[in-house]
Length: 602
Ligand code: AGP
Image 1 (cartoon, helix red, strand yellow):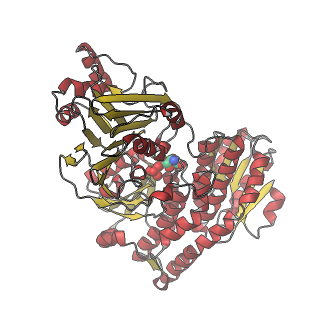
Image 2 (cartoon, rainbow, N blue to C red):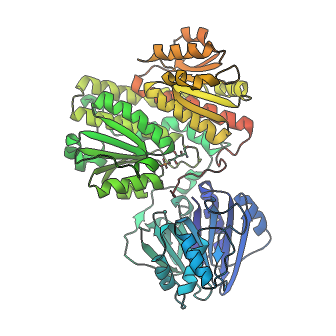
Image 3 (cartoon, protein in one colour):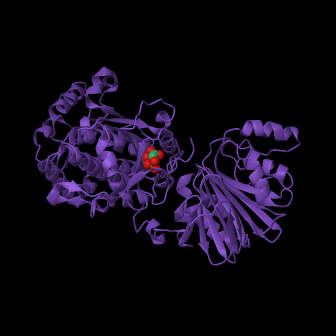
């Protein structure tokens, strides 16, 4: 999952395209490249490694021009080399292209084009496209692109230019996100709205199979679109004095919950208002089964939702990961509702699962953070989590927004069914207190920092939890893996004795999430199993529980709340723990290696 950026207009293009890449640099950072054009003069510069390496190469080059394209790469096909870095050019160095996505039939195309005499310089899938466009180029670029795309199978967000058809950018999209920012006599193209926000307020989201032809004072799209108003405020994507976006976003977790519940709780009726579902409220009343689909951290939020929906809405709920669900043959019917959870709304595996369910005429509902993303435009209805822009690759505050939204969705469906007014009032009242309780939890940050110091030399970790906190254990392990590169596994507390216990010794600590809930006693037995094998245990427990201190090596506390809401407090401590471990280990916290913010390829 790479990111692309382009500019055509009256201003100097290079600073705008480089800023676009910088703002998207969480979408991949194996290598980067730009091409700048002044009239028929084109200059291409590439660099392996982080964007800073390209910036260094551009220093003192004083490259001028009013049109440019750029790319930041996450290697899918071919090693991390300069030769495999975009932009790619054709045999005559006339056509140049940057691409986000995967060309599935590239080998077939490449073999054919080589037979026709084309010379390839890279191992990538993308390069086949530029030679295919060259094959059809008769002086009109968009025409050549249109013909070439007919032969391509896969996903793409392309930006293409041609020296022999200057002052023109052609952009095309299939599945990978691609947006065009519109201003007086200038256009900015990018994969992500954050790269456009500082320069334009009007955007067009290209739809699948749309091709845009852009010149300094005109934009023509095959299949017309109505511009939307971009909600995003440019300066939001700043660190605001924090050393890392991740820490800033962890500190914004209480606010993320507040934003999600604001204006949606109806305490007096023990219910919630989710405006985005009004048009299907009767249909939702008839739903007999829920399927929740998501990837990564969003998948763990969905798993917490599964427990909530079954226990409090009395609805059978199952959860699956997008990359499996899309190739399964799930048995669904008209009484099934498919719920898709995604921060970015652009995760390819989740979108593919969504399109499968639409194909079958199933009611599709999205729980999404990014406004205007593909998931929000392709689901029938949905609820925004309102967590604000999440920049760090490791998702944190969006997870809290997802949990708050799933808790409200549970009340919404529960009150349509057996959930009594009293229970509805209890959940709504407790949910309204969570932002303040979350701020309490954040006050433990200095303590977590100390604990991270104490545990910094361990190379392997288990995270265990039961019921609502089992998915939290999975999330805690994922965060530690993602940003500290340490080995960590999340397990249901009861599962250890079926194998993983074999790994336990004084060098393999376990983080046990054991609030005082319906499964607390069971968690205590699991902790004793570990202690019996000299395992070290750091517990997350409910304040006031003094007993646990005698049993474990270290304990951190969360305030009391409803069992179903404890994940919204316990996970904050695990996000902080992973963060402080990564700080000690000196990893690139906001841009961990080999990862990217939203996974727009399969
Ligand atoms: C989480 O920290 C990761 N960045 C990743 O697992 C992420 O949750 C996953 O790719 C799903 O992304 P989405 O919520 O944007 O769909």
